[in-house]
Length: 380
Image (tube, rainbow, N blue to C red; front, side):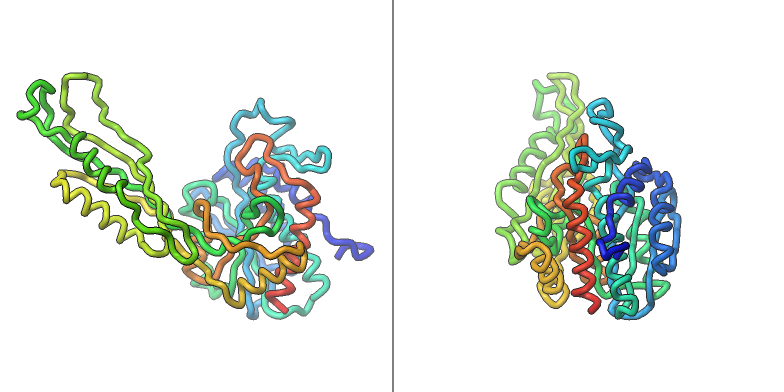
């Protein structure tokens, strides 16, 4: 606690972080700002660079239980800068609202955790276990040289936590209304069907790959892959691109291409869905090439001691019971789940990635109090 037993205010740290123009993968001093806040609290700091990406792992204590807060200081580009009211990296407060790129996603969340953790540590200097932060500069980018690489280092060095919390802005309408206990898997397939080019007036002398592709896509989209599972909504398969590259109206092209994005639940794996795509193509006797990229597999941290502790923290601070959710896109939690239980809990994500991204200062301070309570529930 600060002087007079007042809670530590996360606002100054949030402003300092926002004023670093850390558009992925640039750091622009953001991790240095964070290091300066953590060092006086007794954290051992490990700065590591992979490729162009700066990352930070910081740990206080060596015992168990080991609680890890995960987040990112990189942000998306500002977009139309002329549409911003003030500087995107100004960290200005107007009418009780903090503005700037990263205010919502997720420099504000990092500042709130550091503030809440500061108060927890000062009130409990001999607390059980240890606290760590895994902060990357690659979450908004390819996510290749960030959390995934740091986790491998953590495993080699004996730093794998017992539980992790990702501070993404996962609340929907009000702070703490949602605990995100899992995420759908995500994968994209790029498919090229090969045919035989010819004159459209003599189709018998050609093999139209477009017609075959239409039949393949009909197979893939006519029936849902599932009806959902205990914790997930139904898997979705969306055709997100079609391309022939044909500028002549009387030529049957030699190839047709499509792009498909699949968001899948825990009834599937990316390998199983890949085989499903192959089966649809082979059923139409297609000659094809297919490239698949997997952003992450589906995962869920089922209710248990850790989820219950987070629910108690939210109920204690907000007076409401959070909903357990697995919707949305992907996050770095998809990497952490391979090592320990992970849940996402943060502020309201209403303005993330938008022009004039913002967070109410009152919400930021409430989030700091919530994170302190999380530590009290998990490290007591």
